[in-house]
Image 1 (cartoon, helix red, strand yellow):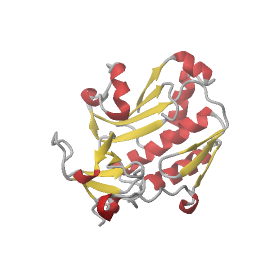
Image 2 (cartoon, rainbow, N blue to C red; image 1 turned 45 degrees about the vertical axis):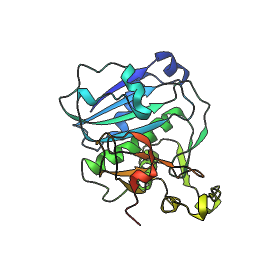
Image 3 (spheres, one colour; image 1 turned 120 degrees about the vertical axis):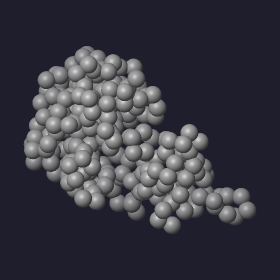
Image 4 (cartoon, helix red, strand yellow; image 1 turned 60 degrees about the horizontal axis):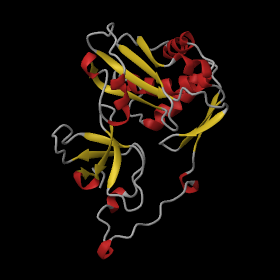
Length: 252
């Protein structure tokens, strides 16, 4: 595995973690997995609630190492390493490098509440989650396991390695329920989308740029009241606010 770290070194100083500590954590979490074709890149940048990770399911290369769209558009501000392999599988991670207080709790987009005691625990867990996707889609492991399976595996894996992290899946009944939307003429044109949860599949029926037409995508979070768009994630790891009338719910 090749790995690259971007950001300001003073941000790592605030986190009381060195560049070598970061690489040691990545290698430790990946031990036992064939990572010969994996490239992992970490971005330590300030941004409240901006911590995220993504595994790119398609083969990547120097041209696709960065992107100008979506939540990862900031990657275009950093250089492309000269030492990249010709083709590779790619994991991107972004973490707030300002030095947040620990222990801290964090609710992810899939209804899981994680508690991290150190920044190292958060980094290890995020990487383990994305490594699960790499293992599933590239190594054909974890058959039919999605985001919840990735959370369960990541939690168990990093705990076994001695990282201090705990998590619980929040009860849907206890989560705030969205208010019923009021639509014109008593008809809700998006009622088939109201019950969707993070990770549910949809199909793109229309894409004006003809890039994602007929592609299966996944919901990032449930829609808000009276929303006409839903946040989805395409197979290349990009997130979009897509008009729902351009989508098809394949489960309906």
